[in-house]
Structure formats: structure tokens, C-alpha cells
Length: 422
Ligand code: F6P
Image 1: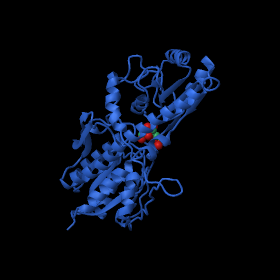
Image 2: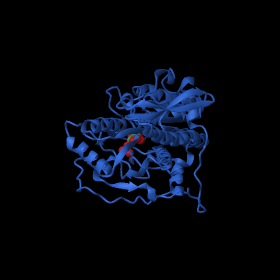
Image 3: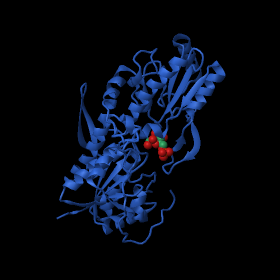
Image 4: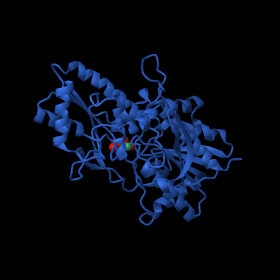
């Protein structure tokens, strides 16, 4: 006899392995007699509000298995902030109405800081409204900025892409520098925390190895110091590769790459610091440049995913269901590092209260004294996270064999709901 249904939703920026967490959730839930149907909200919490619930039981065993190697968010994700209960009680009431109408007793929300906050609030509010609901956060973010957990599923794969890409591009620049490009600038994600930029540092060992310069959002950008380092590197090595975090700020605290738009959480949209720096180098030093902004390429690059990351993403999905069945509420399965070499990790529950709305930045001892590289401690932390390959299967036409789900919605039972302002 089932005790109710489970709702899973994806939230925020997706990753190369968020679907592996979905597979972990669905496969574990399918094994339990206690859980009836597993629904997935279409486009995250927006789908829950609109009562757009996908019936995952219509997806085959093979399709769910294929989620483990398919990037993007298979059910759709969103950036949508629930207002506070005081500001919009009706929105929470609506969610509870939807949950009640479909006998949803477990809500598993796969996201980062903001989503942990949403799950936390929802669990408190369900309590206040007297609806029996367990909310479990499932960690995910390429930014690697969730506290408590050793790392965030999604990060290791994006980190691997970053380290591999700068290795390859540096070989290219090295070949051309005599008569052509001398400086290459690659921009990576990471709004407030330089984890992805730091991961590029795994590509080199010595200060003269590429990438020669990493610019972290944790440090204020110093134009003169940057230009001097580029010049010194080109004079010594012949060429220079730079990795810059999208979140780098000037002394006034302003993002170098702000494009002027904001999302529902009030975050500025970032992007474009690489061309800005490349132009600066050309103007001040006269070097020919190329630049790249992998943007979504880095967070969707499942073809070069980290095996460790992919396994952790799956494991947190499975653990979330185990916690749900064990009666836990307002928790998140987090990764606990037991050893770095060889890397040993375990999953354990942590309170959403301790995770929501906190941000983990690069510790000072992970950044080299000159501010342009990573330390041995950072290398010890980062190296295991990009370890191993988990290539997707490829089709005869040479493309990866990714799955697209049916995503069939169940019949609505409630009146239509209009989402206010996104
Ligand atoms: O999810 C984190 C992140 O990838 C950030 O690093 C990046 O700034 C942001 O998402 C981009 O968000 P969006 O896809 O909503 O523009």
C-alpha cells in the first residue's frame, strides 16, 4: 500500500549531471512500495504552481537509465523565487492545494542555494498549514558554492571541461604564438565564487605552465597588475593564457561583465569579461588575442563529464529518496570527504537551514600569493573531483545517444493558476 506520491523538480541553472540525480530519485522511488507515483514538475516550481505534473511512470526503465548520461534538465528547470509567506500566502497555499490534490507527500527539489531556501520554506509552511509533507533538497550547481557539502554535483564535470579546454586551447596558442595569437582569454562561470576558474589551474603545475593567469571573483581586479603579469608572461614564455571568472569585480565592487539584466532572484546577468580583457590587452600591450566564453557549453558538457561527479549526482538522488522514506524533513544529502588521495566520500543528511542562503567561496589558502593561480591545497581538493571519465554512448551518426523523455502531464484537478511576476 502506497503512502502517497513523490514530486521531484529541477531548479536553477542545469548541469551535465542533474539528470543523473533524477535517475537516482526515480530508480530508488520505483523500488519502494511506500511511494506511489513519482511525478516531476514541468519547469521546476512553476510547474508545481501550475499543476503541470509529469507522470514519470510512463517512462521506460531504459529511458530513466539514459538520464544518467544525458545533460540539461530533462523535466525543465526555472529561476523563480517564491515570495515570503507574509508577501504571498496564497502562492504557498496553492502549492499545498496541488500537493493535496495529487496526494504528494514528498517534495524533492534539485537545486542550489536558492532552491534549498525554497524547500526549507515550503517544509515550514506545510507544517503551519497542517499538511503532512517532507521536503528534501538535492544538491546541484556548477558554481560549487553550497556550504556543508564537500562539492556540488555538476561542478566536477564543468570543472573537468574547464581544465581540459584550457589545456587544449593552450596547445593551440603555443603553436601559433610566433607569428599570430599571443594571448588567449577564457571566461568561466562562477558568480561569486572562483571554483570553476580555480579548476582550470589543474591544467598546469608550474607558474610558467598554462593557464598563466587565473582571475578570481574573490579578489579585486587590479588592471595594472594584470597587464604587468600578461607582459611578463609573454616575454618569458612567448604567449599567455588567461582564465577569468565571470564574477570578477573592480575596486568599486562592480562586476566587470555586468550586462544590465537581472533574474527573478535579483541576480545580475553576467557575461563578456573575456572580450573586455582581451581588448584591454590589445590596447595596452598590442598583442594579438583570441577569447572564448564557453557559457552554457561548460555546464552542459556531458561528453567530458567527470566520473566522480556523475556518480555523486546519482548517489545524492538515491539518498534523497532514502531520507524521504526514513521520515527526514528539511534536509539535503551532502557529500562528506573522508580522504583526498585516494578520494573517499560518503553521503549524509544536513539540515537545509544550515545550507540555504549561504555561499561557499574559495578559501584564501587556495589562492596563490600572487593572486593569479591555485595552491597545492586547492589542487588536493579539486583533483579528485574531475577524476575519471563517464563518456555517454554514441550513436552510429557520431552524436551522443541522449534521451528525450515523453514528459506526459497528468490530468489537472484544480482551476488554472496564473503565475504572477517571474
Ligand atoms: O547555475 C549557476 C550559473 O550557471 C552561474 O554560474 C551563471 O552565472 C548562471 O547560472 C547563469 O544563469 P542563467 O542560465 O539563468 O542565465
